[in-house]
Image (cartoon, rainbow, N blue to C red; front, side, top):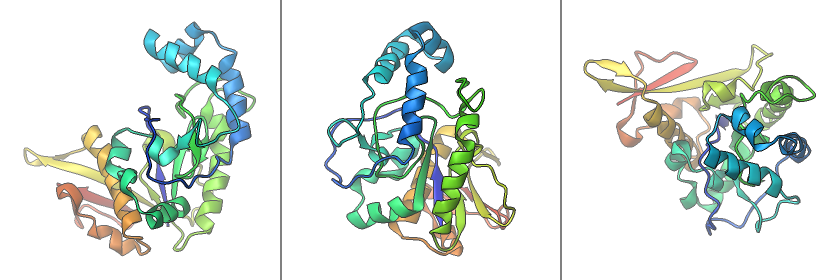
Length: 254
């Protein structure tokens, strides 16, 4: 079983004494290539490319120029602890046990516009680069062209190393598009979360993001290896709805 998550724009690089274990991103050469492309842009071009304001432009312009290799615990932080948006607030990796981190390292991937595909304990430095960013590169006009083949191959290699070979998609549609499905026999389970309000079901983005993190936490903390056990998720008032669910899509409501 392999879980896929999206990254977050919000990142926290304060020191956290959660684990001293770390790994290095497997696509460091590619990340350096992208940073080189970004360093060639002026602040106005950065602002337009990333669709950000003046303050964020200054921050990220500096980030690209401060990008420094090799990555060490002194200049970088584990991805699962550095990302700090709603998904990762739901994940709450700061209170993982060593066994939880070990399981997550084998069963969780975080897609990234700069790093391609990250394992939880891979060190990263601060950045902002969405997978949909239209940065011209040697493979095409955007990050999908740059990453799709690499992310797909790596995801499949990670999936082959797990049992059962089921891909749990908890990523946004924007990021999951980076995985190009070629083999129709690959088992992919989509999971969606709905709020029951005023006699109707609605997806509310901020709640959905946090629920994705909570689901990933449930899978990791309970070391889930059987697809049926996913239905036992009941955090924050959610419950599995068999009437709305299908074999390839599980629906949880509250």
